[in-house]
Image (tube, rainbow, N blue to C red):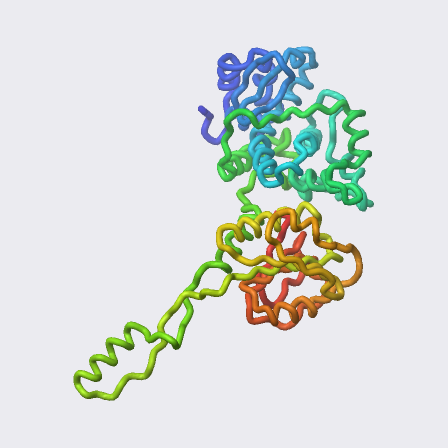
Length: 422
């Protein structure tokens, strides 16, 4: 898209783009450069189209419905900016990725609610007008259980994914239920999702992150709009690798067939050296063991700290990844439940075996019983799902993964730390 070097997009560029695309959005886009240069710069990377439905975003395309023209000019600019940020923050792509990760437990309406709330908070801080009633992140966070005070800089401390997980947290252990306060809020605000994932969209998070940073810097230089209002924006597109992918790599490494030394067979190098020594009458070389395949079936132990804050959804994702590795490697998987003692042990042969695990919540935490039992088994890998609210035992001989639901101030002295909220 053409821009003026150092100054960002030109006003005539917006008029040209508006004529080429949506007629309904033409006035709003034409004025955007003066009102919010940051949004104006990002709007040039979006496709603008008119259609007969509601105003919505699908990938990198914004569709403007007939109702858009009934809004006042400031509200048209605010709503256009709202959807430009949907595109720039990759909400269609992120929603699709989250749906793939969570499967049937994913709640797309709540994700769209979280995305709208974060965007509206940013736009209101930048002085934009929005069609009423508008959802806000501040109001949603106040509805969450356990939140007594809301941090003053919401846009720096929260992002769409974190807000979604907080809104979708199981109510009294039932993942199908939604906080009734959130349901009432959506009804009162007449909330309707405006993000789709049907079309094609750009998934290059690093490219969009660069575009947004440049646009915000342009806005800071101009002194108006969201660029001047946002000190730090936590919802920027990122290329963070989901923790499931890290887990998959660690599991495959643990169960891979690595040759081991065997004194039952000599190394090929030793055979050659011994033959040469015999031929010349020299002393036989020192024996060198050869390598042999480890024929033992790999064993994976997943130990669940039932007193910790690991959610049922995180446990389901963990077990799904472990079972996928089991199918590919013929590994033997065991699931243990523990608090101050090892209270349940189950061998996982299939996915529904998880339903037979007796999980008792609450109580203290003691890692010693788990590590004592694993020392006798000597598994290929021990995975401990915990919040690390107890002293770590001495390091074992086998590899260990500590899976924690959120970052911890003091990582264990041994093992690999895997943070599950990324």
